[in-house]
Image 1 (cartoon, rainbow, N blue to C red):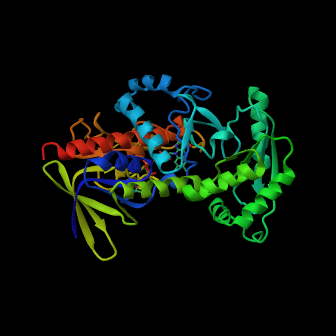
Image 2 (image 1 turned 45 degrees about the vertical axis):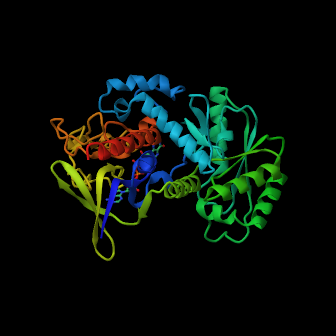
Image 3 (image 1 turned 90 degrees about the horizontal axis):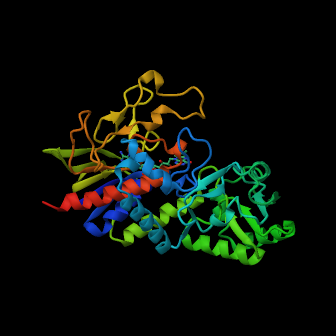
Length: 429
Ligand SMILES: Cc1cc2nc3c(=O)[nH]c(=O)nc-3n(C[C@H](O)[C@H](O)[C@H](O)COP(=O)(O)OP(=O)(O)OC[C@H]3O[C@@H](n4cnc5c(N)ncnc54)[C@H](O)[C@@H]3O)c2cc1C
């Protein structure tokens, strides 16, 4: 089995999907991934830069801070030209709008939305189903949970939001309520199962009727993220809730699985297929073929036999330790999993982890070292493969959790890598 492509992208997280979108108009593109990336587990908001290491509080205007990161040469934002970063965000906003999942932002500012435990989280862009849930909105909100839902605790969430309101002086009163879901008490349901239940018109009527009974003067109603698993179904549920309750309605993210992430990934893959990208999910890439400092093909194990897909350029967007792009942490021999690229370890082994679980962990900053064109380099800075471009969490030099920049870095570096792969892969061949 031999197939020829201009660009192969490995990985279907934010970085791989962004790279494939950027490359889609530039030739034959193949997106290969073992599974969906963390996009399907995350709230699906876009965090561009939420916090600065060592500085208390959250970042209000990310663009004002991004320029300062250029002093940290290893940070991916220091390698991505500002206009490319801007283009990547525009590409995302345009693409999700075509997909029927429009996003909203606040003119270059972060918006504070309620997080899973009611702790406000800064988001740069949010899907229309979450945007009305701003914690600084002055209209009171009712947060409604389902009694069979295992992963959403309205009382706890609202207590934290009201605590934040008292301390900050922002926003309005939050109130919690729970509605009964008949027939599932024994096992309970997660968010994905509830999103499936919401497809049933009779169940939606029940939800609207129950919430109407509980509403006082609140102008907004927040629910767990259960509106749907695709764009069309989500729009229908959202509209029926808005019409039936005559209130603004919004989703509040909670633990995985995440219906907003699943719907984003599902619709994005659909969009890429419509754009002519060949998508192959479910198979692990075992390695590559390479000649004269260039990768010439990607080896994939299918149940029948190993196959080689030939390519002019490769985007490696395989994630970090949890995404399987990096391995060997426990064994003390960290390596990149597909090409065996060197990984820049920014700390000696005895300092890889912090004992306190919630403190920043040094190993999170480990990743493949690249030059300014996202090409992998050795410890002396020499380019290892001129037609390989690295994107997303596989890049080192930053902490997506501490900085709240995981989706922003993945979108921007994926987009940049996709563009570079198209131009390098075709020019001069
Ligand atoms: C639990 C959790 C919570 C997080 N919370 C936040 C947060 O609050 N704020 C924030 O900014 N960031 C957060 N992040 C980080 C952020 O989600 C990631 O930085 C970002 O999603 C990484 O995207 P990615 O596309 O680079 O990688 P991933 O999403 O990990 O995708 C990797 C892809 O590569 C594929 N792959 C890997 N190896 C192979 C192979 N050999 N063959 C084929 N396919 C392969 C995988 O199947 C997958 O499709 C969180 C991450 C996790 C795990």
